[in-house]
Length: 283
Image 1 (spheres, one colour):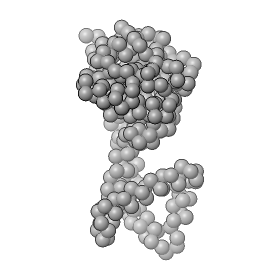
Image 2 (tube, rainbow, N blue to C red):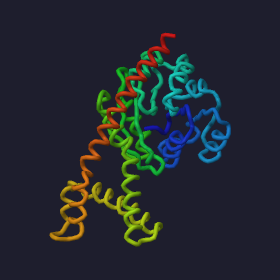
Image 3 (cartoon, rainbow, N blue to C red):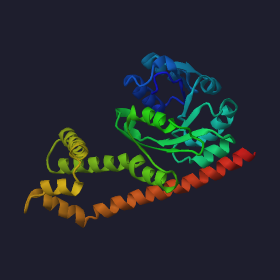
Image 4 (cartoon, one colour):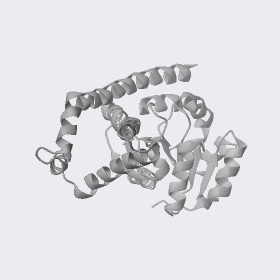
C-alpha cells in the first residue's frame, strides 16, 4: 500500500526515527521514497546513514515532495511548524500528526484549510515495534486514507481506529501513558525480589520476563485475564496469597484511578491546545 508513496517526516527525533525504522525494516516503504527534516544536522546525518532515506533542513521541501506528511514534532512547536508549512499543503496530501494532546480541531485551526487530517497516538513501545497506536480521522479524509495511516503505524506495532472526542483522551490515559505504569510495576516487583534475596540483575530480568510472558499469553490465548489468573491461583497456594495482598493494597482501584487521572489531564491539555491554536491563527 505504501510502496510507491512519497512519505515525509517533519521532525526526525526519537518517535520520527522509530517510524522510519519500522517502515524501512518491514519493507512497507522504500527508503528512497522517504524524506525527513530536522533542525539538527547531526540527526539528519544519522538517519540518512542508518536507513538510506533522503534528508533536508527544509520543512517546506518535505511537504512539496511528499504525498503523506507526518508531523513528528513536539506539541509545543507544532503550531509554528503548521503555520510555516501551510502554504505547501492541499487536499492532494494526507497529513498525519503524532503530537501528543493536540486534537484535530486545533490542527485545523492552525492550518485554516480543508485538509485530509489524521491524528495518531503511538506509544514509547514503537521503539521495539510493539506500539499500541490509536488513530482518528478528520472531516475531509478520503477513501483509503485511514488504511494508509494504519499501514504506517502497523510497521511499529498494532493500531486501532477510534472516534476522537473523549476516546482519544481515554486511549492516552490507558495505552499512551500505560507503559509508565508497567515500568513502575516491574520496578516494584524487582525491588521485592531483591528484598527476598535475589540479585538486582536477576530480579529485574525475572520481573521483566514475567510481564512479557504474561502479556504474550493474554494476546495469544485470547482468554480473559480473570480466567488466566484463576489458572495460576491454586487453592491455598502462593499466588492467591499474593493476590489477596494486592487486593488489600487497592491495586485495581489505583490503576483505574491512574488511567482516569491521565485521561482527564489529556482532556485539559487538549482544550488548552485548541485555545492556543485558535489564538495564534488569529494573530
